[in-house]
Image (cartoon, rainbow, N blue to C red):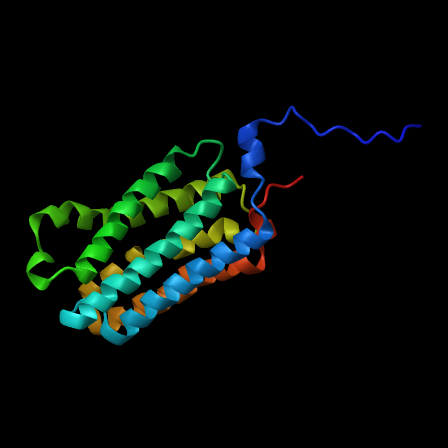
Length: 208
């Protein structure tokens, strides 16, 4: 018998230790950040739709920025838990594209009207839909990798079906209906995803 405590393991790769080092409290806060940002944008869509001008358009841009910051919270959890697998290249590329889209949302929301449609903003605007396409690819990778468990393995796919459902609805039925479809889908998808992270953070932590 010995009273000498066991030594800490040193054979665990640093990248794996970093991946498993995200505390549940941090996951909860990041999940709530995603939900808060989503609620802000959904409220704007309910109030002003997604196609408008003037002050409602600026509110839409800035609440859209709040949503994008919430998605950054989601990306942080995905990165630290290696949700898509050992490689994080896809997540890093998505962070860059989402960052550019977020800068566009900020600039388009605060710049004078004569600068909102400047040619140099157009490439940044394109990053908005590209960032959502990237999140869809990430959602598929999460489902395939199976590192996240339970509802959280599949809920990113629900969240990322927003464009697939809302855009055809806007084209076929019109914006008056699509605004409600899009707003409620945000609540069901991203807002619920954030709530799940806050309520069940253990489902994204690696199993022993």
